Amino acid sequence: MSKILQKSFDTESLSREEAMEILNLPDEHLPVLLDAVYAVRKKYKGNTVGIQILTNARSGNCSQNCAYCAQSRDSEAEINRYRLVPYDKLLHNGHVARDKNLSRHCIGLSGIRFGDNEINEFANYVKNLKKEADTHICCSIGFLTPQQAKTLKDAGVNRINHNLNTSRNFYGNICTTHTYDERISNITMLQNMGFEICCGGIIGLGESKADVVDMLFEIKKINPQSVPVNFLIPLKGTALADADTSHLSPEYCLKILSLARLLVPESDIRCAAGREVYLKGKEKLMFYAVDSIFASGYLTADGQSIEDTIKLVTDAGFQVKLER
Ligand code: SF4
Image (cartoon, rainbow, N blue to C red; front, top):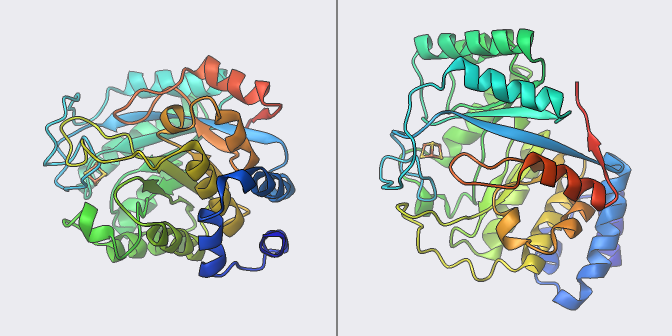
């Protein structure tokens, strides 16, 4: 284990076998792992934690069949459905992000492909937001054409999210309406255009540990600026409503977050959806690996309030990071 950790500290790549060793580490050795991972986290991220809020700018009615998603075409989840949120709602959240010194405003739009008119309309929102509540803006906005991406870049979008979600091998089990490679080629295009990239996954979809390792190695190749690690919240009405997530112990979640830090040490490692459920009571330990979290809920699931999230960070001895 100490050899593995020294390699990470020296930014030498771990092998797949070493990555599996971390996920298979007996729970009693977790404190040793967390201590060492903290040294890597401190080297690249110091003592700060960025807090983001998320606005669901377009909800439901997606043409895709992602099994975990309440907004998919096959989902019967009871959610609000709307084409585009009123600008005032986005502005309100932009002001919240700015006034509470949060690091980023993430904006999600359900759907996989958008018409140019829709992108232009949203780009105008972003331009105004930048003027009226200047924060870093990240968007999750499906597959963009090069022209649409340029429009959003010119409007001021800083970072784009495209989660790989799981391994290439397992992808067909959770979605059949688009491919893994379509995601990767869109990410490559966006990187070539100078966008920062946010790229992570979801744990608890029925994947094996080897799938988790494969996904994290794909993410390592992409080398995104941020890596959100979500833990599945099975939502009523979705295909994964009855998914067995009993293996998502706090210890297993912490090993995955640690591995993400070791494999992509310079990126923001974000503990995203599910932290309130699966790390309950042990959330402070995630900061050994993690330097980024959401406050105020997720696209279609509730989360912790901004005040409680800030308190979680400061009570753990970390500082809230401001990015302006
Ligand atoms: S994850 Fe995105 S693409 Fe997949 S169903 Fe949900 S909104 Fe659509």
